[in-house]
Image (cartoon, rainbow, N blue to C red; front, side):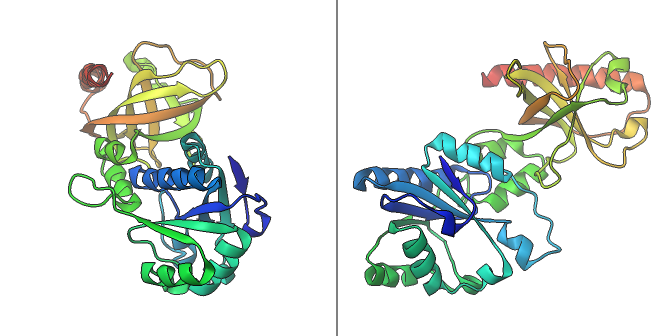
Length: 315
C-alpha cells in the first residue's frame, strides 16, 4: 500500500476510486467502504484510495477535547493494508485546510489531486468547511465533474449503526466484547515489557508489565481481563493466553497512573524492552481493594481460571 502525507504528493496515474473518513478503529463499517472501493477499482481498472485527515479534526476544532484513539495512524495503516487498500493519503488537517469549501474540496482535491473517477461515501458523510457538504451536493458535483458516486448503507450493531464514537465508549466502559464485535477483532494496545514493582512475582503470579503505551491510545476501564499477548519481535511467540489487570493497584497503595500488567497462563515472560501487543478478549471483574495480599492472591487464582475458561471457549 502506498502512503502519502499530503494530497499534493499523490502520484499514481491510474483512475482512482476514493473513499473518505477518519477510519478510527477500521471497524466493520469502515471495512464495508474499503471493500466497495476495492470492488469498484477492480471493475474500472483503477486504484482504491482512502483520504483521511491527521490529526483527527476534533483536535483542531476543540483543542481541549481529549480523544482516545482506537487505532494510532500506523496501526490504522497496517489494518488498511491488510484489507488490500491500494493507497492511503493522510492529509494534514490545518486551520487553512479546515476552511476548504465543499466545492474546492471536490474540484481541487478529489478530482484535481487524486484524479478521482468514482467516490464511495458512508451513509452520513459530510465534508468541507463547517461540514457544509452532504450527499445531495455530491450528486450535483458528480454531474458537473463527471465522476461516479455510491453511498454505502450503515452497518448495524446490536441496536443501531456502528460508529467509532460508540466503540470508544464500549472500550472505556470495559465492554471489550461489544467493541470486538463492532471492530471485527479484539481491541488491542501495543507497548513494551518494562520493570515493575515485583508485586505479582511475590504473590506467585509473575507478570509482564506493559509500558510505553501511546498516551492517545484508548484504554479499557480499570479491571481484570482475559487477554491474548503477542511478542512482536521476530523471535517472539504469539497468541499467548493471559489475564491482565489494568488499573491503580489500590491494595498496595494506589499508583499515580494506571498500569497494565499481564500474567501469562502457560508461558514465563522474559525480556525487558521486548515489544508486545495485548488484545482484550473479555472483562472479568472491576478493580477492587483487598484487605490482605492473601485475599488478593486467592482472587487472582479465580481470575486465572475464569480467563482460562473464557479463552478456551473462544478458540
